[in-house]
Length: 484
Image (tube, rainbow, N blue to C red):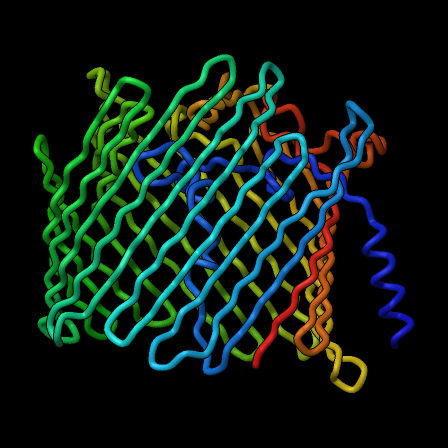
């Protein structure tokens, strides 16, 4: 068994990865408008650290976690090989009754669309509340056919919550983003956001709250301010949840409503919400309504997850006074998994489409994934082995009919033609010996009619404007979990 493990480590370390995706490491599509940060066009992932660091899991004993992921990238234009890294470290010492944690992530990606960022998170939790701080420094490059544009982001945020007696809870925070876009010109986008929120907990089922928000935005010499007050009530008992509020600003006010029913394994939600202003795109806030429904079931042999959301956007107007048409958005996702003792078989599918072909348009239509996942114990149960082998079919608009705007990070459909499909095969192998884990990820597009050059250098394109598409890559991950 030791010989097999040594051979496996040698083979995985020697593998070279040719990751040429538009965002590390191997995402087929990115810049989904649904994932943007409030008031900005940037993805939330560009501005804030990973959820793993932001939401630490405090355990009875102290913990240290470390992860190192390496990807070797090959530059087809210059014939050079670069080493890319993603390093994560988290420390949670034992300290009672308070708990605290420190997290750090370093990303150095030297692919066609390079990323260099540092994330640091400090969490402190005490008996009546918590304080959280994070810092992100992110340099992100987007390489297009016609130009290269750099995004430089520095973000800081401090939030807190504190219990005031048995009935009141106070929350607040401040964040600051300093953003530069650079191609032929340099554009500066600086924004700050402060909020204060007070909850009155009348009972376990009923609470009243009020939230005040102030956001300042500056783009070079242009400035804008958003001031919002939102009073609301929440009621939750058994399978029923309701939320009613009013979003009040100096120039307009919007009602907010949310009703949820959860008779397991089903759920149903109807809502009326407000999208925040998009300062960079000069777009005002507006309302949208929709429903969510689905079923989540998990038994000894069967796991079923199915979700459907349909929303309708109302009164979307930009500051120039030109109305944006109302439009529908549909999102659906499902997964069925049949579980055996040592392996699972699964089938998953997703679909997303919007009738708006401007800011909310996304080229990916649907994906279908089928695979098998092995999980077994070897060497007298001292070695845990997980293997996941799956195939993806991705249906998307023809890249030759899609353009991408690197300033607003939005796609645009130039010509509406028949969609096309692509195939990918993915393999994940993960071994764990006590607190040590070693993993290997391999992903490659497959097309029998294309040669090796296509599989290594071209593959699936996200847009004809992008310099490179999503091609073959392999990554090695080493993790260590330490407990005292």
